[in-house]
Amino acid sequence: MAKKNISFKLKQLTKKLLKELNDRSQYVITKRFGLHKGGDVLTLEAIGQEYGITRERVRQIEKMALKAIRSSSTFAEVEHIMHELKDIITSMGGIVEESHLLSSLSKDPEEQNHIHLYLHLGDHFEKLKEDKHYQARWVIKGETASRIEKALKDIHDALDHHELIPEDEIIDRILCHDGVCEVLTTNYQTSENAQGWLKISKKLDKNELGEWGRAASPNVRARGVKDYAYLVMRKHGSPMHFREVAEAIEKTFNRKTHTATCHNELIKDNRFVLVGRGVYALKEWGYKGGVVRDVIREIIEKEGPLSKEEIVDHVLKERYLKKNTILVNLQNSKYFVKDDNGLYRLA
Image (cartoon, rainbow, N blue to C red; front, side):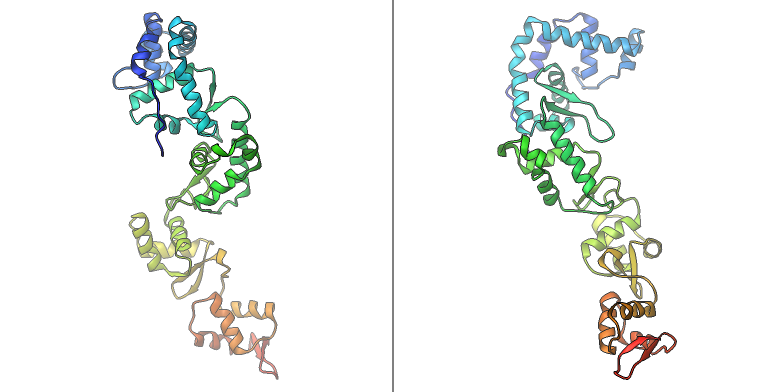
C-alpha cells in the first residue's frame, strides 16, 4: 500500500485550534479523538462519567466544539489541510474505508488521531457510518460513493454462495462495472484503488489463499477441517487421499490435523465425493457418489449401450479404481447384460 504524502505538521496546528475552546470543550475533543500522549480514545459514556453528565450531553459538547473551531479565526490557517485531504481522497477514487485512509496517511497511531480530527472538521468530504453492508468510509460529496457501493453489491449478488475468484478477476469486475466507468476518469480506475474499495464491503472478503467470494461463505471464512480440506483440494486440482488432504492442511495453513478427523469430515460433507479407496474429489468437478455399479448404470443410461473398453474409460474418468474392479461389477447379470453386438446394456 503506497503511503500518501501530507505536507502539514498536525500536532502544532491542532494545539492552536484547541486554544480557541474552553477547558471542558478542549478536554472532550482531546479525549474523543485521542489527541493526548498515548492516543487512547474515550467513549462518550466514559467522559460523561468523569463530568457527571449524560453521554448525549457529551455528544452535544463535541458537536459545538467542532463548530466553534470551524468558526474561529485560527481555522483559516488549516484550510490547506482540508484541500490536501480532499485531493488525497479524490486520488483514491472518491471513497475510502476509514482505517485504510488513516494508515495510508500515517503509520503513527497518534498522528492518525489528529488526521481523524481534521477529517471531521472538513466541509469537502463526509463520513458515512458503518452499517451491515459497508465499513465506515470517507467520501467526496457526489455520485462516486453510491456508484462504487453499487458495484460492490452487484459483484456480491452475482457470485454463488460457494464461488471463489482470484483477486485480479474481482478487481477487473469492479473497474469494468458500468457505474464505476461512468463517474471516474481513467486516472482513478486503478488496481490499487479497486483494492481499497474492496476494504469497504462487509459482504465480500478473501480467504487465506487470497481468493475472493462472499464473506458468509465457508470457503472464505473457513471454520473447520472440512472447509480447509475444500480449499487445499481446490488448490490441488485433482483427487487426493484423505491422508494427503490432512498433510496439505497442516502445510498450507499451519493447522494440526488428524487424518482420522479429516477422513470423517470428508465423508460427512456433500462437497466431497469418494472416488476410490480413501481418495476424494470435489463434487463440483463433476464426480458423482454411489457404488461402482451405480456409476456404470448412470453411464449406460446417458450414453446407451457401450463396449467393455468404453465403459472402463468412462468410469475411470469419474473414479480412481482398478480396471478389474469395474469388470467385476460389469459381470453382475442382475444389473447388466451383454447383447449380440458385444455391447453392455442395463438388465
